[in-house]
Image 1 (cartoon, rainbow, N blue to C red):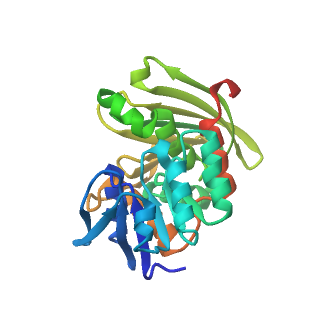
Image 2: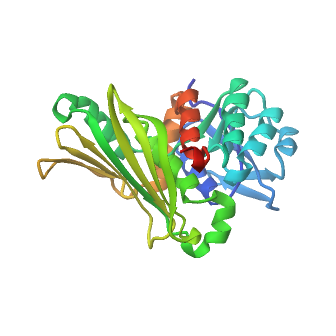
Image 3: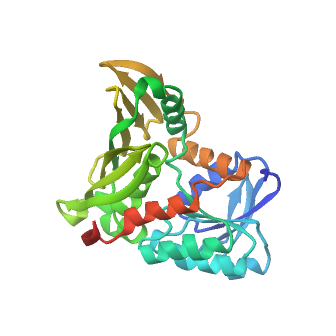
Length: 317
């Protein structure tokens, strides 16, 4: 499938929708024909052209039959909206914002039940940006020199502490919102297998969580430590992978940069300019894979596993 003449419906027109729109404007043949939002809004613009807005997918279906539907509503609504979209547009490819739901039952409903009838992908925008693509290529090309991963540390933080109540309604908590980002990045390098622990640290309003994930790299076992937080001054998202050779691969997802440390020295470096904002650059890479190349973002079984690691009850860990 190529990116020619894709008719796209965007459901949910909040802040994250703008990143989808900015990325889609750079994808040849992509055309956002309509939007859906429960808030009264007469229209919005795509490539400087006005786009009509409807209150429900059913309302939009009376005028449009898109082949692609992007769901960018608040996380707790994903499953309900996805079911309505599937009912209205059974032939469409669906892209739902990450995570697919804020509970395991609804995540399985989206990915397994609806996903068995039509293509449903999750917008793992942190798993495919330039710094991750660079790190993965470097690790694969230098596998003999680097060895196998032996430990992973990931820290994903956003400054949502001062607006905790409102953000909580949209995103849940830092683990639900950012844990899925970290898990998706880790899954590009190793196979996450089980969650051995998950605990909240400090006050609920800080939304700080620590998780330990058992992983496999070939036949070798390793542990990934993930820290998520909403109690910071500025966004900070970093994944560090240590290899059996002693080398460390560091991916700074906020700076869209990467470093390889070998024997205490910088052995390789990757960086980008500011011509495209960081989040837009991430979503552009996602759409180039999913829409331009027509590929699945992550296999269904892997996506299900990531949501199980994210959403399984804490007392099962």
